[in-house]
Structures are given as structure tokens and as C-alpha cells.
Amino acid sequence: MKIAALAGSLLVLLIASGANAQSANNGRWCLSERHVGPNVNCSFQTFAQCQASKTSPQDTCSRNPRRPARRH
Image (cartoon, rainbow, N blue to C red; front, top):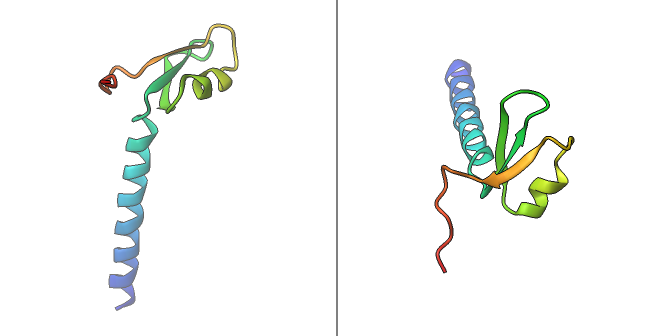
């Protein structure tokens, strides 16, 4: 019984961590940290959030190419 409960808890944690990883790249804006190599973080909902996270003048913010632009 304890093994089944432990396995169930582990499954819930794995599913939750997968959802967090997906949402980490589902923002509208991406930060490309060029000073550390090809590191891209697409977790930002606003351009201002992305700009505030820059740590180097080489870093750039751009729209997330995996997410369609808003239609008005």
C-alpha cells in the first residue's frame, strides 16, 4: 500500500513538473542571453519583464516564435 501511494505521489510530481516546464517557454516574449551562449528563456508575458531580466548589453528580447501574435 505504501509503495502504491509513493508511486502515485511521484506520478503527480512528474506531471506537475512537466506542466511547469511547458509554461516556462509559453510566454509572449523570449530573452536571448547571448553572453552565455545560445540560452533562450521564453517565460515572459510582457516586453518590460523581459527587458528587466537582461543581465548584459548583448541580451535581446524578441517575440516568442512558438506562440502566435495577438489579434485585435
